[in-house]
Length: 158
Image (cartoon, rainbow, N blue to C red; front, side, top):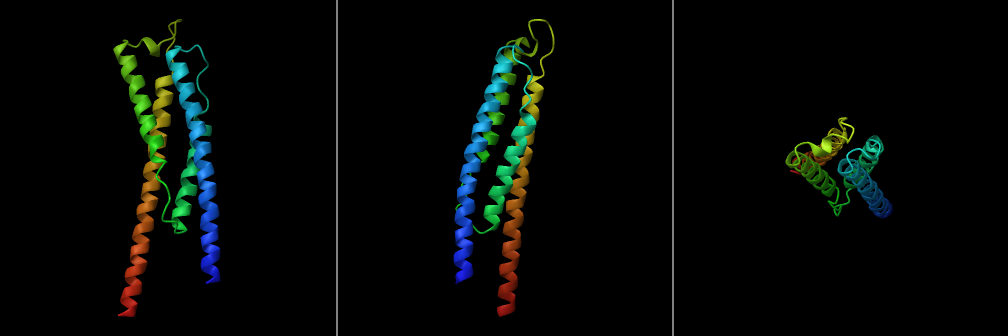
């Protein structure tokens, strides 16, 4: 009984930490997206974004912690992380569409230099998508292992 109470307390603490990590990740996401949009729409008036690596590491930490909370048995883990995928895919798609409709106007600086913002946004988007798929695989693995454990327990009790 005491172990169950300690486990539930740990779950509650980790769930609270994960909520904070979500807000941190959401804030960094917003900053990264604003930087991408500014670089794109100003046609390189700002230096190339360099937040990509930092952002992806923050997202990995949030995602892995969320999976850890799930593995602890917390059944009510919110599915907010997938919104990062949707927003990045949407933003990147819109940037490509705008650039296409403007006949590459936003891909080339006023000085005639190619701007790497579309490539950078695509890279971040694909990395976000890869993290999402990886955490989905972890979730499926947990479900399979849990189901296998339950089936083994049932077989032993028969």
